[in-house]
Image (cartoon, rainbow, N blue to C red; front, side, top):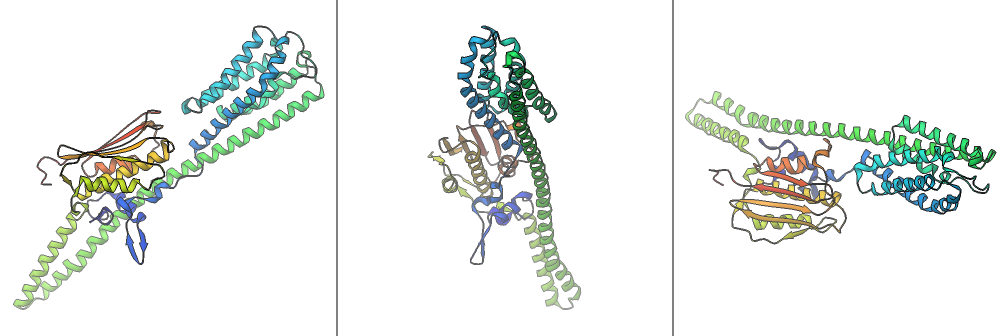
Length: 435
């Protein structure tokens, strides 16, 4: 009996039945479960989430900062003779360092917001202190070099600050620039200063509106997804309970009630013997229903287990090597093999989806340890923080850890950002277990 068939039975995990049923496919009128009860619905991912939006924002501001910063270098060099010999280069170098910080924060997610705030504040300092930076008035055919970076500063503020702070910043930058451009040290630009200020305000405002709208949409999607996951989990439990109730009701109706009616009507020796046999059958049915579960599946050798895992991961989008290790002659129960194989497959799927591309080294080790089995699914990819996994994400907790724990095994996740990930699955028969 496979996990997919046994899941609705008594003692089975609530999530197993629905996952296996969703993974089943119909071919020529027959239903064939997917390997190891894999649930294709787990591969469906929201098109927009808070994490994806913030990631896109970090990349956008990094590209803008580095790109605009590089194109502004000639203007800064041309105006250095007119600037204070100490404060002028110091402001330019400080702002350049903040741009590099923004670029580096793309690879360290927890520093992204800090880098954006630092960039926005340093740009505002560079703009407001421009009158103190200028020693001699710049030529009339040039504009102060901070002008070319107004959009970068406003974009960093829109992505790093709260909406109301970003709104104040977006209004302050064009105003300060116009005031500076109207002064002699800013070029005494007149009407052109007002036009430049309006242009900056429109562009910065558009960036701010887009950022706020996308963040609110992503927050709504995350909330809806969390609600859907909670309702789905509740529906799974209710479905498992209903399936078991229907099964018991059928046994009671078909066996117990029929036996009682036959016994009540038995008025001959043959009828009494028939009622007795029916009673024994009813008792057997009830005992079978209580004991029915995936543990009835035949034992599986470690070689067969490794082959099943290798066949499953062979269809993934990135290569996963299954290392050859000497395996003993022990056999594990079918339910344990199904749980370990399903957990290993889910761990490999998570690695392909989140650890990186095909250049990441991924491996699976299946080996015997004492009377039990040890499986390691690892990669040298991006890694992650286990404590930072949102509660609505069920891939690691439900599909890996709880699946192995349900068959009296143990699962451990060893990972850290940038240090790769190893999923360790262990199972050994309990002392005195006849298996």
